[in-house]
Image (cartoon, rainbow, N blue to C red; front, side, top):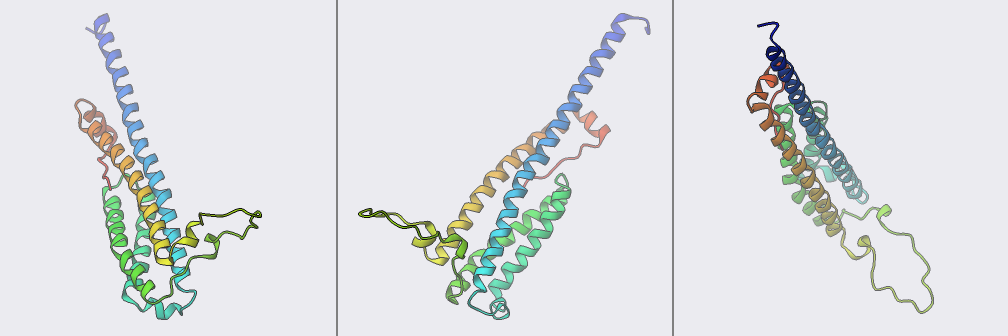
Length: 209
């Protein structure tokens, strides 16, 4: 049997298949990690937006007085929780428990945002950051300007609502890409006979957001 050409042909085909299947699993796993990196970048920008919002709220009112409001304290706590969960998930994007904690933290943040924005508006402390206001430019004689920058035509609360909505839309798109990558990876590691390689090399199922 050992000297049979057919035997070695079968062995060679099996090895080539195993190598191809392993490379496919690696590509799918890498796609999950890369797509999470894109989502991570969007979330970092959203956290930065919340930092700008907190700074804009504290311009006209003492930080301690504003933080005493339950809604503002909830938003700050949710932001801290999200940052911590994001750091853990960034190091382990394939860990289901890390993704579950991140998804829960994101839900808490989204639930606390409307109340914080409303409370800041009621207290008349939310402002538009100076960086968002354009520098004045001389107009040409006889020229009429019919449009104005976003920061000039919107109230402070609406300004922040629009910016928040833009970030949420971008994050949702990044989540959709990440979840698609997770589905493809999870389906690949349970298909026979690739699931044998997945078991042998420790490929574990991931979790979407």
